[in-house]
Structure formats: structure tokens, C-alpha cells
Length: 226
Image (cartoon, rainbow, N blue to C red; front, side):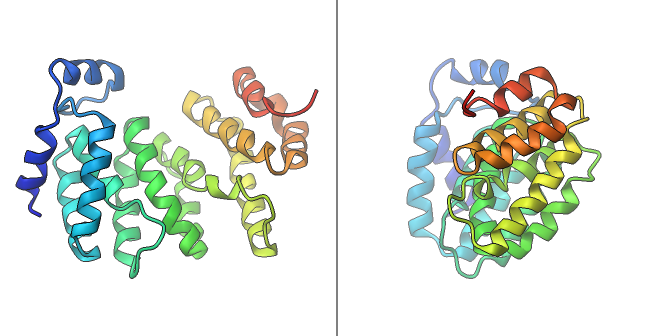
């Protein structure tokens, strides 16, 4: 599968008028084809079956470099899979994209791919921790979005408990950040945590909640019993 062939297949699913609507919605200044996510899902599912890991990494890298919205979504989906062996090149490519995030949709799709690689090798959390000190807001946000699986653990093992506490420490360092997307990410992490360890969310809010934006505190405590 060449880049040209992949783009040709993507463009075949473009819908009239959709590209302009997407540009207005996502606001990031890049080309939009007008392809719905359902079509991207179908295409990338086929590509994943047809290509080796090395070929997928090569195509994903090429798709990303086009800066086309749907191509970047496809690049992320091409690498979204629980079991990939070997996956060092996959993780390296995903991590290299983080500094280029500039909109939530692409960032979230990439983080979903990254979540699988983190759970496959939790030592990569060391890499993610460096993102928390970035001057770039989207990079800081990605550190919480990509580690959401740790918020969703019902019965974490001792190492996972340590990792979860470590990530909550990052979130605590974010509560004074005025950026809406950062506050939303903290709330998102805590909201998901509540479903599995409400006592940890309660403790976090008791210690740090007064410094969070009101909307974020409300969202974080959404599933706590009153």
C-alpha cells in the first residue's frame, strides 16, 4: 500500500460539503477531505490485516506527514491494536507525533493508539512523564489522555497502583493550569477513576479541588455519591 493509494482510497469516501463543515468544527488550519470516521475505520481495519507492522509504520508516518486531517486520523487508527509485536517502532512513531498536536480529535485518536502501547509496556510511562513539563498545552494534556487505562483499573496490581498514584501526581500538578483543555483532562481522568476507585477521586478533590476550575470540579465529581 503506497501513500498515493491510501489517499486515493480515502478520497473515494469524501462526502460533498462535509470538508467545509469539518474545517469549521475542528478549527485547526489543515486540509480536510470530508471523509466520515466510519469509512476511515473500515479502511484502516483492512489495511491493518493486509500490511506487516513495518509496512504499517511506514504508511502511518507518510499519512501523518501529509497534514491532512483524515490522513492523520487514519495514521493513528492504523496503529491502534492491542497486540503488536514488535512494537518499539510503533511507540516511537506515536510519541514523535505528540509535539505536533494542535486539536483534540487527532490528539485523542493518537492517544488511543498510544494507550495500547503503554499497557503493553508500562515502563514507557517514564517517556510520558516528560510530556508533563512541556510548554505545549496539547503535549501536557496527552500525558493524561494516554494514561486513561490506569484510571479504569478495577483491581490494580501493586505496580499498577504505584503507576496510578504517579499519574495522579501529574494531575495534581495541573490543577493550577488555567487552560480549559488541561482542566478538562484532569476532570476526565478523575471522572473515569470514580467508577473504579471513588475514594481516590474524593481524596484528590478534598486536597486539590478548591484550585480547579468550577466546571472541572463538577465534572470530576459527576459520579460521586452525594
